[in-house]
Amino acid sequence: TYVVTDACIRCKYMDCVEVCPVDCFYEGENMLVINPSECIDCGVCEPECPAEAILPDTENGLEKWLEVNRTYSEQW
Ligand code: SF4
Image 1: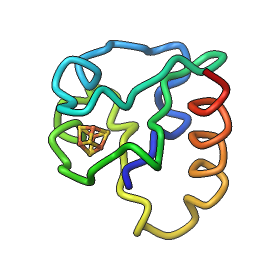
Image 2: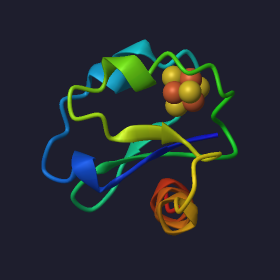
Image 3: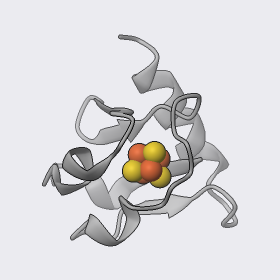
């Protein structure tokens, strides 16, 4: 899955939301989040993000952000 990180805070450009084929972006408190159970790992959102806030969860140190994405996307 891909995760949205803190570079998104107060950004919300929404370019990523428009390209996601499965609509798995959700509004968090002050940033967007990706629902990890819905993301199909296609990667098209990553280059669309002007803040470079979207990263694959295979990168180191993203456990905390994965948790944030899961928590905020599943409250809907
Ligand atoms: Fe959506 Fe693909 Fe980005 Fe996952 S990787 S959030 S499916 S655009």
